[in-house]
Image (cartoon, rainbow over all chains, first blue to last red; front, top):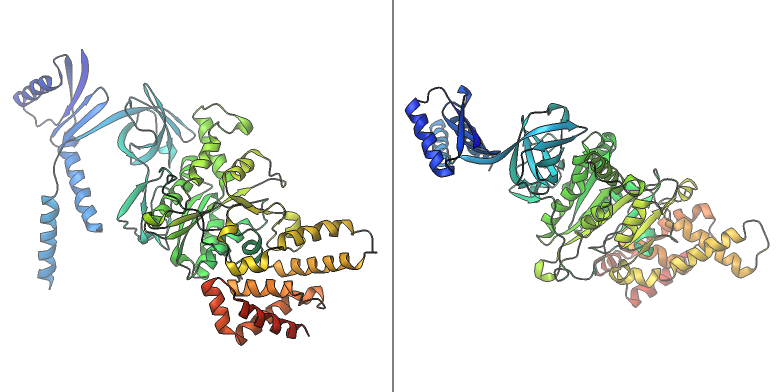
Length: 76
Length: 498
C-alpha cells in the first residue's frame, strides 16, 4: 500500500471527502491508503502529498498566486 | 480625472483577473534532513535538475548541487540559520536566473538578481546564470582593439575585443586600478562594462562604485557584487551571473568588457562549498573540477561573427598571488586558460613604477593583430629595448665604466621607464600615446634630466594637440598615422628638442 496524505479544511462534508478519495483512487491507482489531516489555514480545496510529489489545489495557494499575478502586472 | 484613474484601474484589474488561470500547483516536496555551514541535505527530492533553485520554508533559496538517489545536497544563498531540520523544500524546476538588458546599466545587483542599490529593478528578460559558450562557428578572430588608456599596456601587451587577458599580481600592486582605469577609458567608445566583485570587502566595493560614479562611468557599467560576508554559494555564482549580464548585451551586438575581481577568491569559495558537500579534495584542497570552474567561465568570452551581430565579451580576470608566486595552482590554471597576462610586481610598485607592469613576464597572445596601425608603427621594438635595458641595468649596477653605446642604451631605457609611468585616472588617448612613443623614438628627451621627462612629454603632447588638433582627431578616428602627419610631427618634435 502506498501512503498519501490529504490536507483539507474542516468545512468539507463527508460525502464530498469520500467522493474525492474515490476519484483519486481511480486516477492514481487502487493501492493507496489515504490519511486525512485538517488544516483550516488552507480555507478550502485540498492538498495531496503522494510519494513526495505535492498536488496543491487549495484556496489559500490560489489566492497567493492571484496576488502575485496581479502584482507582477503592476511592474510591467 | 479621478474617475478616469478609477476606470483604468478597474479595467486593469479585469484584464489581470481574466489572464489568471486557477490551475493546481504540482511540485516535488522534500524535507531538510541536515543543515550546517550553508549546506543542507534534503531527502525526498528525486527528480531535480543540476543547479536547480530550491525554495525552503520562509522564501529562502538554495541550489541543488549534489544529486543522489534519495535526495539532494544543496547550498543555501542566504540566512542559512533560518533553515532547520524538518523544513519543507520545494523544487522550482528552474535553474538560477539573472535579469539582463539595458535596465541594468548604472545598477548594482547581487548574484541572485536582486538590486542592492535601494532602487526598484524592472527587468524584462531573464537568462540562466550557467550557459554554454559560443561555438567555434559562432566566433570570429579578434580584430578590434580595446584601448585601456594605459600606455604600457596598449603599446606592449595590447588587448583586443573578445580577448581574455589575466591581470595577476600580489595584493596592493594596483590590479583593480588597472581594471577601473580601463572601464574609465571606455567612456564614449560604445563599450558596456560589467564589474564583478567576488568575495570582496563591502568597503572596497563601495569605493569602486564611488570611483566609477565620480568619473561618470556608472552610466555604461553594471556592478555584480558579492561581499566577503555572503555565503560561498553566492560568491560562487557571481562571475557566472556577470557573464550572463554581459552576454545579454553581446547578443544585441554590443562590445562588452567584464572584470572578474578576483578569481582566486572565487576558487576559495568553491573550495569551501565543495568540502562542505564532502567532495574529495585534491591539490591545495581544491576539488578536482576547479580548472573546469574557470575554463567554462572564461570560454564564454568571445568575439561573435557578423552573422550573430558582431558583439564581443572581453574578459579581464584578476588573480591574486602570494609572495609573487605565479606557479601556484590557481594562477597557473588561469594563465593557461587566458590569452595572455599582465603581471604586476610589488618591487616595481614600491620603486615608484606605476602601473607596476613587469613587461618581461607580461604577454598578449592575440592582441597584436588587433592593435591600431599607428600604435604598431611606433611600438615595434619597445619590449626588446626595455628588456635589454633591464638586463644591462643589473649588469652595470656596480661598475661605473661603460662604453658609449651602453650608456646610450641605459639612458634611453631610463627615459622609456619614465614615460611609461602613469597615474591612476589619467588615461591617454591614442594620439597622445602615439606622440609620446614617437618622441621617444626620435630621442627628443635626450638632454632632459630624468625627473623632468614626464613633464616635458606632457608639454610636447599639449603643444602638438593645440597646434594640430585636426591631425589628433584623425589619428584617434582612423587609428592610423599617415606618413605626411608623421613627417610633420617629426619636424615639430625635433624643433622642440632644440
